[in-house]
Each structure stands twice: as C-alpha cells, then as structure tokens.
Image 1 (tube, rainbow, N blue to C red):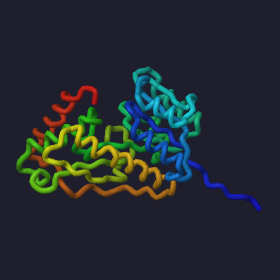
Image 2: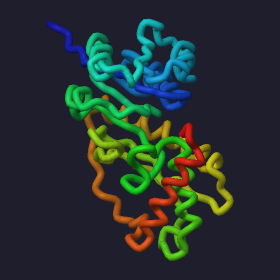
Image 3: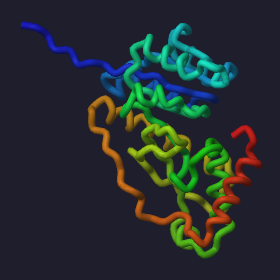
Length: 246
C-alpha cells in the first residue's frame, strides 16, 4: 500500500533591509508553526541589508542567500531564475523595495504576497514604505480636524496583500488595526505596528499552507475624505522628505 505525502510549499522571502519579518517567518517555519512549508531562499535587493546576516544566523544555507541588483538590465530574468532553480512555490515581499517585475508576478500568480505597514490605498503607492508610511499617517491625523478618523477612533492598520503590477494595489488578504496615540512619534507607532506585521504575515502563510486564503472586501471606514485630498497628498510627500531612506 503506497504512502501519501503532503506536498510542502517552498518559500522565498524577498528583503531589502533589516529582515525582521523574514526572521520571524523563518523561526515559525522551523518550529513547525507554519506547517508543510520550508525556506527555499532569501533574496535581497541590497548587498548590505541587515537581513542577510539574520538569515545566515538562522541556518539558511549561504548558497540560498542571494543578492540581486534591481538596477541591472536583466533583473527580472535573474530574479525569476533564482526562484525557479530552487523550486520556489510561494514568494513573500517582506520589506522589499523594488517594483517586482511582471514576469515574476505572473509566474507565481496567486502565491506572491506583500506586507504593508499602513492602510491601502490611502497610504500605499510608490515611495510609501517603512517609516514614511507611519509618518504620513501621523501627519495626516494631526493636520486634519474634520475627519471622523481624527475625531473618534485613532488607528492605522497593517495588511497582507497580493502583489500587483502597481505598488500596493493587490487584493487585501488580512488586515489588523493598530492604535495611534496622541503622543506617538513615528518610532513609537512603528514599534507598536511591527510585531503585528510579523504575526499577520505568519498567519497568512499558515493560510497558504492550509489552502484557506480569502480576499477581504473593501474597508467600510473612510480614512481620507475628498475635501482633505490636498492634506493627504502633502502628508505623503512630507513623509518622503523627512525619511529619505525609508
């Protein structure tokens, strides 16, 4: 009588910075919290990313820790080649800055995911990542007096979403609110949101392993009103200037 083996997903995590989410994902995979999944590789867009050393210290083989320059002419081909030769079946963008090439998105279809530290589409898009997102949220909140979001509940949210050809346009799969306090600095809000981001991405991958992914509908709450469009746009532009490195 033959044995039946459950196919294991092979995960690639794409990073550009410190790799804190990547590290938590690797730990969750190794502990078995994320079932039926193994780490295929870690790919960084920067050769000085702090996450590279974290991956090595967590036991990812050096041959599976790869740096790919997104400015090279054959970036899309190289990225897809590295993923395919390791048998990758799932891709997560965990602090990944480059725009992912369309050929990679198409190759992985519904199994390529992104984490984002703020509400989308309002605080997503090109240039919106890292501390910039939290700065934009705080600036908008403090500059608007008429918004229900400002008057009543003070919150932001972190999300997990599908990857789309446009920044932060993919369907949202998971979202969790994070409180915004009156005295918050950008660092305060980031510190409160980051552990929630870590947990959310782990829960997403557990859903991937179980085949229970569901797309969420559009959020009902209105965060930015049409009358405050200029303030909203200015908050994002100012955040980018305040945090040129993200």
